[in-house]
Length: 129
Image (cartoon, rainbow, N blue to C red; front, side, top):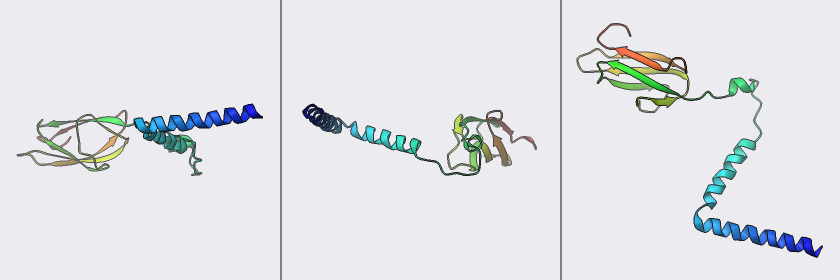
C-alpha cells in the first residue's frame, strides 16, 4: 500500500512539474488545443438520417479561371466570401463568377466546381464562354 501511495504521489508531482514546465515554455496552449481537437473528434455525432458517406465533406479543389483579355477582373459573387486568387482552394459546389474588363461587356457565369471541372475559360470578346 505504501508503494502505491508513493507511485501515486510521484505521478502527481511529475504531472505538476511537467505542466509547470510546459506552461512556462508556451506549449500548454498547444496541448490545450490538441485536447479540444480530440474532444471534437471523440464527441458523439447527432443522427441525421443521411449515410455517413453522404455527410462527408469533399476535399477542396483548386479553381483556375482563364480570361480573354488576360487582365480581366474576376470576382466570385456567390458561393464564397473569399476574393478570387488563381489556384485558390474551394470546396465543390456552385459558384457565380463575374468577369469584367474595360472596353468589354461583363459576363456573369455559374460554375459547377468539382474535381473534374476545376478550370473555367471566359472570353469577353465573344458572346459565349
